[in-house]
Image (cartoon, rainbow, N blue to C red; front, side, top):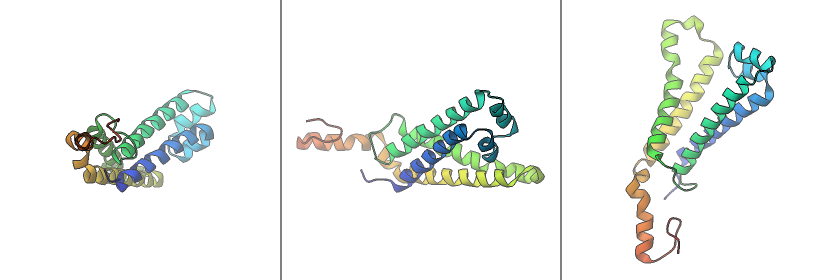
Length: 165
């Protein structure tokens, strides 16, 4: 299967986001403030509460799993279960998060700061990249397409990535 560059890019973006979340845990309250986690989270981190780190680690883990799904779908390693469903959900979540700011811009534009606009645009780009990669790889990600190389290898009696010798 040919590599899907859009999904490789989506995996890199999700990996970067996961690493930034982990860096925020190490960076503490100032990093939480800078990345828009909110004053309550920043103050909790200053008080030594474990909750900001737990929440941020959970988000980093989710983003890491999303990266694995993108890399798997791109053909960098074996297929993960429910790959098409996962890619659709990941694309939808990124796109909805990116577009969530639109109603607020219409209803309460004075409540929208620069950080909210920039972060929403960034996440929207993540969603577009993920969605394009999903769309371009959709046919090759079907169960039948995934089994086809094994069928070909077995008929030729050649060992391959899914058919051991």
